[in-house]
Amino acid sequence: TQQQRPPMPPHHGEVKEKQVEMKANRTFMAAITTLVMAVTLLASCRDARVYDHFEPVNDDGWGRNDTVRFAISRQKVVSDVNLSLRVNHRFPYRDLSLIVCYETYPSGNVDPDTVQIHVLNEKGQPIGRMGITSASISAKVKELNLRDGDSLYVTVHHNMRRDQLAGVSDVGLQLVKH
Image (spheres, rainbow, N blue to C red):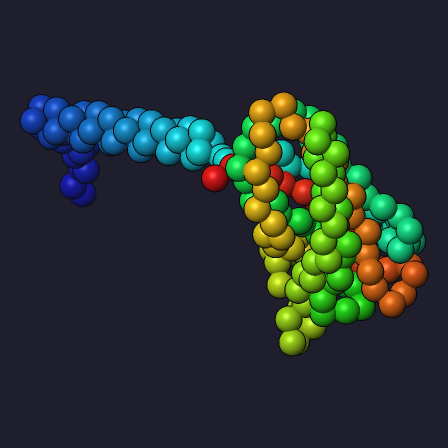
């Protein structure tokens, strides 16, 4: 019977080569991590939202007279106004008609507007970003120019046939700086 020899230890050059390769891999991973962090930081610095807030509506249905209110304190900004909705499978229409009223203070200027937001496509599926239980739909509805010291008060209510509108859980307002 032949005796089996133990494996030969790696040659000194092979060990050194493996160490250099492992060091290069660590350096590469550190560079990738740094790059990802830098991109994330830059992206967060470019967020142009100056206001972003959602208000819940009644779970039993959003009543026609249930007005959603947003109060935006002093701003000096030219921005797009985006309305956002969170809707679930109970929403019965393809579109949603809203009455939005913008009141600017201290001037007291009042600017009412009727807005149509497309909610469902022709197949009955929500147009926006899908979540677990609802879809988030956002639409630009106005361009706004607030002067130094202006505050804004926005009211939103639906203008649909039904008094109680099922399927809307939240209404949001965003001001996005130009």
